[in-house]
Length: 356
Image (cartoon, rainbow, N blue to C red):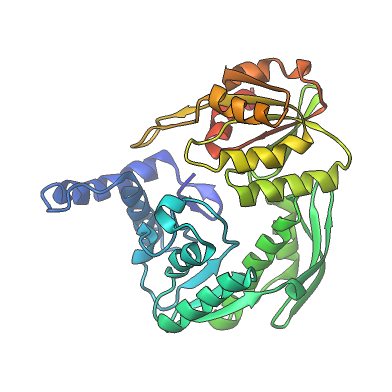
């Protein structure tokens, strides 16, 4: 899923063909003083190579971690358009312990003559972005609440009004839910409008509206029916994301309590997230995951350790080692709405069973 062209995965033959070329470079690096590249360096290099060979008009590249030292920051094209989304506390061991430090790491994806669009956020973050833009001889604009307003959240979509430059569109419907998605969509649309002005192409409003209506993003406030239960699946793995998730759940299903199925990576702010979950929890089931599909092994904090944190706050909590076992007994859970959250790795663990 890391290599898509026109919203389609590249096929296996393409992957093998292009990887064989990249593999030659990897072999040459083995004798270099820095040694073999990391998994991410191979993946990002392969992405760039594929996009170049396929002659894409625009490449949409997501940074891996931060910006300053990220593998994607080798892109030094002055025409690069940088999009800066909401900053939160995550990967603090690498990016820093304050919003300012994290914002600086993120903002340093900007390079000379780049343009940047950022969602408007905390003043201290905006100020860092402005300072870095000046330092890097880049320009930056902020997408503010007046650019996207009239937000309505329903079970199936987010509706909002959008305006930026010469575009004024009312009642855009995004087939994803959660009010925070209106800001994400507004930033993406603003980028499209910005490029249409800079590169001189015409935007067809009906195509934008149609695209928003058909968008799906697995693992981000994804709602699906599984037997008699409604599952809300979200990979919220830090305080910022968990706050957004729970805020939207309360708006959509007011006055209710829920069953939570959770697993957390051991270096996350587990106690802070537990404190957010407890007031909404009828029951918490703590489970685990194990992922070794790339060049590193990822595993969750031990279920009993996490369960003990929830119990300290008086929460009805059980621990189950295998997430698959939880799904087998959905019918026995005490609430109609079940929220599965805490880690994207947990979602990768449970999706195969959900698809059965």
